[in-house]
Length: 168
Image (tube, rainbow, N blue to C red; front, side):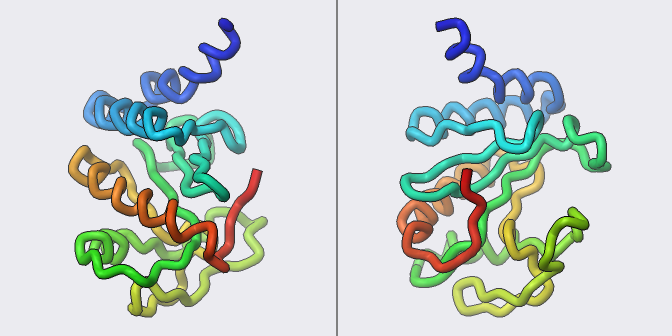
């Protein structure tokens, strides 16, 4: 039972370890929301890297910069995977995605694709990260509330998407 408790609280421990108080409360509340919604984050590459599963595929990742010795950033980021970003009339969701489309940052030499062209709700973008095209750096509580719209959208569309995904 103790091992299960440690696994379940590990992400919270990382939040307390690396995030400044300004980010900590929002991050803890967001993780609580994910758990209550049945989306338990799993450690991915190692410390500081987490994956959030959906019903059929992984939906997004969470990264805490302070646990990555190669990172120059501080805080945390949510990475949403490539998906079928189309077929919605929700203007708030569309604008949220438009505001957070992430260019390729050449994060790894192992990445075989260094930026691609993609469409998001009918708008074309160039040199976009092919695996994590939608990113939220240091999201505040207001942004995290909006991110829930994207989570709901991806829960419905990801299983039917031809986009790229990272599978466990």
